[in-house]
Length: 272
Image (tube, rainbow, N blue to C red; front, side):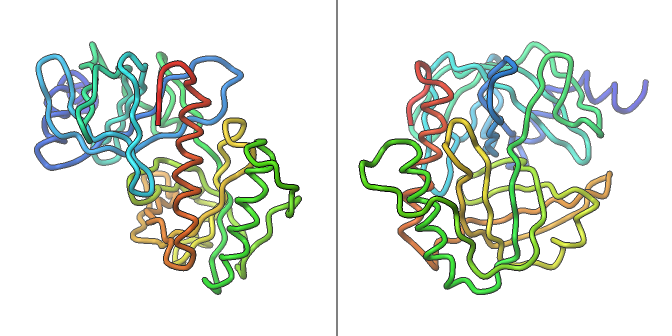
């Protein structure tokens, strides 16, 4: 029996192995239909495997956990080495910082070149504009401008718009990426192999993450590169931690916007 088929048939063992080593899953709210925006995925730790359910950490960003109501449909991804499997699930309930989600009936293996597409689900990763950050102090006015623009565009603040466009801090040449996942302390980015050389030696990043239409304009933030590695297709995976040291007040804005994404995407199912 081919190794990949054998692994797929042993998917419960794979889940147990992930839990035993303290690994995680990537989860996102299932939103079918062509008119939806990007699918924001969270990296959550798989705490334990139960006969009818999986216990995972609640989704979080910038240290803030977000609650998903019982019954919220999910698409989940488990990764072992260079192999990925997707399955559908649903929230069964939450207790504190943990969530219980339904055990799937089966899993589908993802093709390497289309690693977030299977017959039963298809995910759209948010796009990210990335720049090497040259002078961290210059993020303060840039993040203020980004915050002012988004709040004004969303109609949450009656003040007149002070900035019609985002401004940039002092940065190097731009390159593109996809937002693979978001966790409690940072993000995982995938940089196409054609641009991987531009990102391989960077330590501080200025990011603009596109979560439109749920958020009126891309949200900007600073991130510190923690680790990088090449995948089997020679694309560069970048793990980066949120960095609010240069502008601590920006943390609350990012937390609020991620909460807004959840509320707008699931107005009757989820609450931040």
